[in-house]
Length: 462
Ligand SMILES: Cc1cc2nc3c(=O)[nH]c(=O)nc-3n(C[C@H](O)[C@H](O)[C@H](O)COP(=O)(O)OP(=O)(O)OC[C@H]3O[C@@H](n4cnc5c(N)ncnc54)[C@H](O)[C@@H]3O)c2cc1C
Image (cartoon, rainbow, N blue to C red):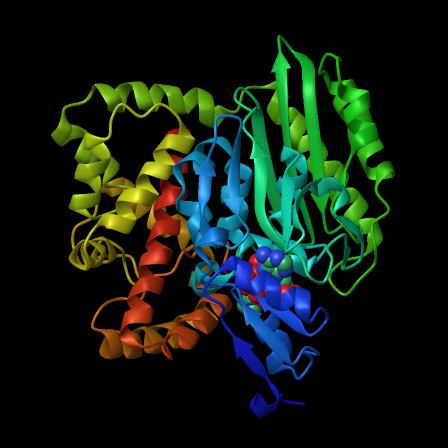
């Protein structure tokens, strides 16, 4: 049943203190709303029980991201876009940056907040395993003052948490102590973006001369709350990583969780995936990842090139000359995190004309040739990215929808096709035809951003 808007009241206090007073004076009366991406779904379904909503979306006190010497304090109202664009988060906390990347669509990322993800308390919340693995702490605030609590003890059961009705999460604190750790995250779902995860892992470890010095493994979607694999971690600490230890640890991990059967997967499937994910992480620890080894060679060559050569080399990843020029000017860049963060920052700052130039370097979905000549490598990547989109049964429908899109927006349709089937791409195309011009341009730019990130990673792999 749909909600009747006249039954609802929404206020937007100008300060955090005013919001807290409201929550204090009428506890249980007012419900905080941040980005609204969870609450508005409940509202639309007629399932929102609260009738009085206090908006905390614009409170500057909740939006700040502060890089202190020992930790990063992320305001609970920081959006996924804020997280993705923050250079220190991209560099030091890539598991959180990736989770922000995976969450929903660009519209979700612009509105949805980290605090909202924590309080929504879905076992499948994408940011939660990363927060658990990093040992994050929460600062909770009410008119009574502030208290600080470990995220690990915050969720106590399915949708249950230690948060009083007059309290807000003010900030999430992540310790800056993971330099030298290999960080690994993976979401197993129908696909990464716009899909609820079946299982997600966020794990990091420091290994010296083959011996595990410290290891932290967190999983989402295997229990009512995200879990740390403490027994498996204990088994690994101080040990030499060899094939038999990895096999034992995979087995231990699968035994340590008691996954659930639900509409998305069976418990048996989840146990097998847990073992595979842990083994994959440990294998990466044993052999320095190819991307890092190959990447260092690619960086060394690219950093040594002339400005012009470096621009044309990197244009295979994104066809905007302004972007390529600014990327080349940022050299020397030395690791993947720095490269990806620089790319995002530069892309967000270039003009619309530059975005359009990058779009023209792609072939139409389902076709081979781009409107403007693209580097050979870019054409090969386009073919790979579209591999799944070329099934004959959707090709005709895609051609027609592409034409309609071009009539409507005057340019080709851009989508990050990697991992999507032709049918999914067609559905996205039809949905995006409903967008107004400005929204669609931003959506296309976001898709190009994702394509560029994937291509930069491939480029590093050589
Ligand atoms: C189409 C779609 C796709 C999505 N995809 C994903 C996905 O891929 N991965 C994923 O994890 N989630 C996903 N979500 C869920 C949602 O976007 C996230 O959970 C988001 O982080 C919620 O944040 P919000 O600010 O919008 O929360 P809101 O809807 O505003 O609030 C959610 C809850 O948090 C409370 N709250 C918010 N901020 C605070 C605070 N500072 N202190 C105390 N309480 C607070 C609210 O009272 C409410 O109970 C998706 C949602 C939609 C609609």
